[in-house]
Image (cartoon, rainbow, N blue to C red; front, side, top):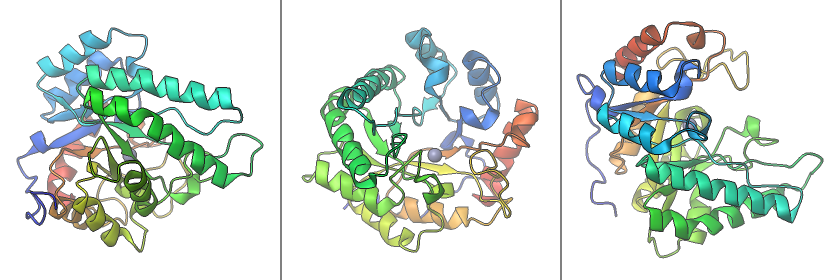
Length: 291
Ligand code: ZN
């Protein structure tokens, strides 16, 4: 049992230091250096960058900038998809992820977010894709432990099962964790993203199970809009949709999660069209009122 289990949920009012901004929330429109300063200036305690902002740049300099701005790194997004049509392709994906894992360590990220992929083009072999995912994650685990960056398996909503993620429930993610880490040595766990798992009838049971294994590595928030007009780019601001975000946060925190609560919104038609400082100010207000 995790030592912090059953603790009361934290109050977020006046505690933006407990809150993180995933840089996707701002639409990847500005250079990472600008985004780091904007997030720090708005008072948040952590940031979650994406590989597109980091790779090919001076990773150590970015890590220093983040630390100097007073920000922690709540997670590093995200893995290259594991399933591939060929053995060489699968091997290349693992090596790609190994390089990204090293960058995650340089950034001092709390975890490396694993969005695992699904069917390669032309394939109908879902079981095969799942096997490649499990094998790929297993191939990275030892290095993750050595580097001190845990692998956070993020199940995605089943609407993405055909392409982005054959991993769709927390229970499946925890099964992989238990299979690869039967002794509970760590280095592997789950990212609970309320957008992806809020509908799951087994959610409460899976969160409790994840907590008992000390496996909750990240908690992502945004909202499910009704109607949703785009499968990928129409996520809602917290409070604008139908997810009981506060209830879910209470669940993960009672289960022992003590990391930053991370806002991750893909919103091409709305939030990405606004000024970054305005989006950040609404995020700050909603963190403190509805999360
Ligand atoms: Zn997420």
